[in-house]
Image (cartoon, rainbow, N blue to C red; front, side, top):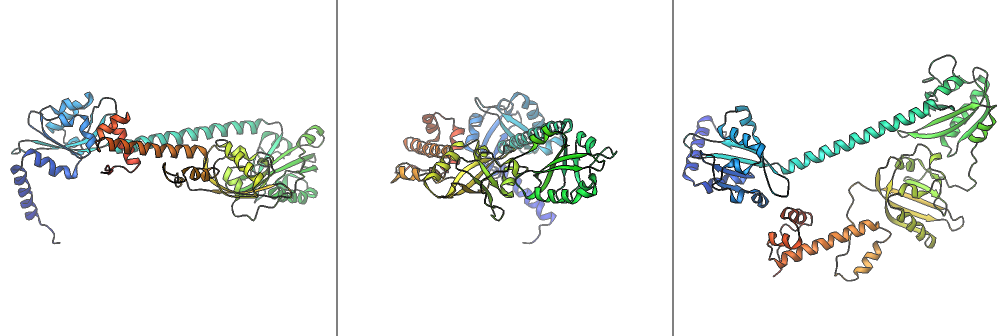
Length: 478
């Protein structure tokens, strides 16, 4: 295509203006309306001569009866001043940017429209072109709500951090957080500084070995290595500090940003009461090594108590260490759907292997996630190995059998145990809602206004439901 020079462009504009002059008001609105949501032709007295809109729902905001009325009478009170300024065109900067004007409607939110006005000395009307801002407003509202939720979550995290840090600082038991790779001190509370310190105000950054006498350093290094890979705490007694004091240690592993670190509790060895309290008996059950399984895995007994878990499960539930999940019931992480876990174990009592069991897992940070569960019961020991596979955030809707189909009851029965009950109920209600809408459209011969009245809905609500169920182009069967 050849470029258009200035002379040809000017001639084309003159042709366009002459065509507009030759058309009536309705034809002008129809042509311009091909690229706009709302088109109004307003005479010099501010009265609407002709209207055109693309969305049928817009007419209910007063546009179907706008002809002959002043444009100021069709807008909300605060928008009247904007209409006056738009029609006069005095504010050139605002005139180029457009005016956001609201149209009222009884019983539902106002209609926000971004208007721009165009006029000419030899053209008898002011051409007012509007863009529907409802979708933009909804997106902005969702953005604001999301921002508020993020800010609330951030405040909760800050408050939780403040609470735990306060408890960490004022604890009378010495606690140290140790980097699992470098074996250096990440943090230490005041009791640890008093018990292990060598005169420095802080222990952060110092190698853990340097806080003890040379004869005990190798034993301490071996204990730290064992604690990183052990599901149970490792306890050491009567180690001598660099100051020569005999203390006992309890080393536990925890997860932080995908890395296994250590939390060390220390107390004087002479404190026999604290030594007894810190002592933890190791479980006697035989536990299968889950480290080689490439998915989040746990092993439980027949009652659902966790005996072992791999690091992928710790990441899935945001647990700091294996010690914090061992001994807890698996239902702890299915608090929103406890019946699912009960059903899983009930089925495992009768079946040895279960695959494709769906549920909602709630992690330690109160976040929900869809998971698919496969489980195997050991017939000899009665212990249960469970693999949990996280599903994408937007999963496919379960295939709910439509009413009236053959073996509908059997179709629902096959979904029990694979789909949570609340999803079955919700999807069934959607199927019933779609059938009711189709029946209303059939009875009214596709008259949307009458169908909405029959269903007890507003027209806007009916249009929303039509879009959700894919019935925008629905036509009754003859």
